[in-house]
Image (cartoon, rainbow, N blue to C red; front, side):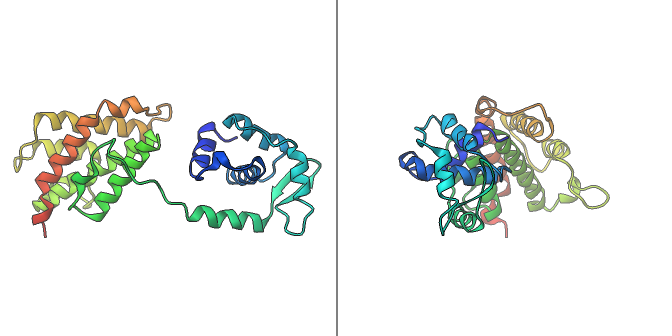
Amino acid sequence: MYSMDLLENFVFTIEDFNNYTPAKQIDYFAYFLHLNNMDKFTAKDIELCFELLKYPKYSNISAYLNNNSNTKNKKFIKKDTGIFTITRQFQNKFDKEFSNIKAPPPSNDLFPLEIVEGTREYIKEISIQAISCYDLKLFDACSVMLRKLIETLIIECFEKYKIDIKIKDKNGEFFYLSDLISNLLIEPTWNISRNAKQGFKKIKTIGDLAAHNRRFCAKKGDIDKIKQDIRICIQELINLIDYKNWK
């Protein structure tokens, strides 16, 4: 069974969905059910979508499904009494439509995207994903992407100064984040500010919980508490690396 959040996020991607006719909304709900492993659905399943979103229901959902199972260009296939699935043609139509949906541009609510300008394209891409996850209230995903961003920047810091051997094991693999942070903080080549020292640990903690603790689900408040730490740590590493002068 799908979650309410999944349904809301699906509808959020469809421009002006609130103003669609209930009949057109049925088509989208059927596609949503298909995407969420409910290839076979009933009028009750469609009705539940209307109810969860508090939208006015179509007057006779069963009749709509039946009527659109008997036309030349039918949208649904009736598998059994009251049970339907969408046609391949109908599925392809929606697959094509949703493949063209663009993600909303990232805000500056997590940290200003401008601070990663002039770094590397992959650094910017990781940052965009972290910010977009925050904007879309995907806080576990946001925490993990922040963890990845910090990990990447620490590695690049050691590489910039040609001392990356200090953060590799005997097989030449980079250490995990906990050891990366430990080595970053004791490295005499640079001085890490007091605020950043605490910040790295906080970002790692929430990233670890989000990635590895099956009972932990990050909330907005968890990330909001460390917003200043996030900016300080990212900016400090970028300043240390000095991408403009790193050939």
